[in-house]
Length: 314
Image 1 (tube, rainbow, N blue to C red):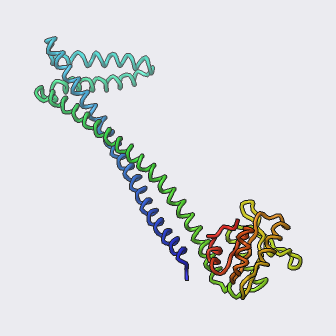
Image 2 (image 1 turned 90 degrees about the horizontal axis):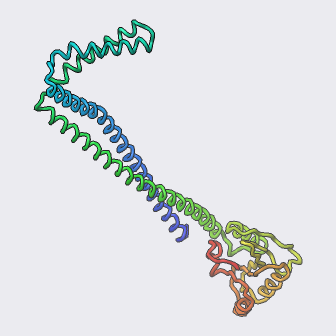
Image 3 (image 1 turned 180 degrees about the vertical axis):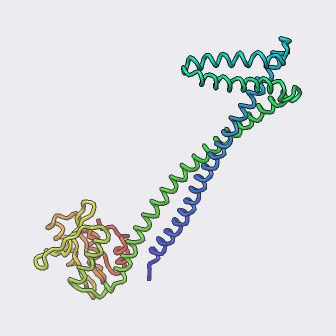
């Protein structure tokens, strides 16, 4: 049966996974909205060019009509004078530029037609009473598009800010999930070890079992000689601190002689601390001696905390 702590870690994993899914959904939302807004800006920019052309045409038409009304020139006669004059100028230009007379003739003919069409259309479309309105309306349309583009750029900026925050939050959630999965995995194996019949283990079997526990908890371990071990069965090291350990797979309570041996072995093997681990209990005399010698005791009552790494041997 899984421990309460393992269940809590697994619940935390599920919670973080759920939050991560929501974060991924928000990221997709931000990216989609930014793409949509960028597309709308492109559409609005596409509307600007034809509106500018219309506005420029209306302004030119207005100035053209004002000019000819002031000069009191026969408007019809302009079609017979100005287009040929401009076409002739272009003929000379293209003839000098290309050196091909046929090309110059074609180009000047095209220019002639375009100028005639322009001079024919400018005074007639739109009508005089519509011209001012169309200029005003075109300017309003351009202004509206400009405001719309500004609003959408502001919206994109807000979305980008939200996206940056969400990317950071997403990375944090992924890190949390990795850590929780790591803890969950270690906790699972700790539970597997704790579920073994450690209470019935004796001698070498118990030593090998404890060696597995220490390795899972991140300690470097070394075993001493079976004979002449000077009261130390295991030496474990973590974060630069070495601990001499006396292992007692007992049925009865462990006496203070085990603490004496562990303390002496600590000095012999140049360790920083000592501990006695049993699957039984300690006598009161052993507990008192351990207190005065700072010998760490692990027994059946706190063995679970030891296996799950909740006790720090120092």
